[in-house]
Length: 285
Image (tube, rainbow, N blue to C red; front, side, top):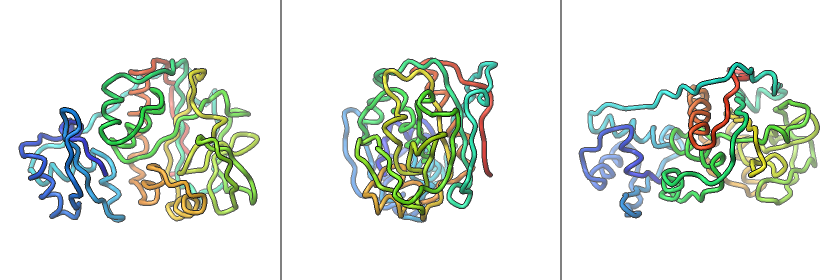
């Protein structure tokens, strides 16, 4: 887990050097791999074991630092302003496989302007080795690296039938992913489908047909809790390990799903404009 010092300092006062804090992290089970200077910042590489999925985001690491340093933890309280238009007017979600996905949430932001991200966002992501794609995708990656909860953004207009179906893949069902490679799926894998076909491999990677592009105007933000073993199996068989699958394999705290979704929508408004539809589609617990 690459931790940006400047980023970390937003959540807790860091009154020691990076090397001192890294040594203290080791006492809590977060082993220090390396420290590197990146521009004017410092990046610490921490080894996060499989039982410490709570530290796969900057806020989780900041929580550890606050305990070590006996400081206060500052967590943003996202309160995105919604329009009068209701999310249920645009999307319905049915979970056909609760054993594979215990919770699925969807929010919709309409009228966004997709383009390059602002400098602060690209710089933050670059400091931890994540390339900028566009402002919408960058926000989903930023929030994942902030709190450890993966998210995915769909182009809402590309979801046929105005619906999301969470289900098991059909044997030999295929999907062209956002890396533009075709993957053959099986019935033990999780897919997110619209009214016609799969549009994402749940917890692993989205599909090319519904990815966010410069032509996208309306986005659906997914935040979910996928079954770790199913995600791990799919990622291994398809050779598609990703930062999202890495985190889902370690079962992020599902209580953070709504926070991550709200935070994502708040930042999308800041960097891409648009209007958040009122409410959230929430299936599961």
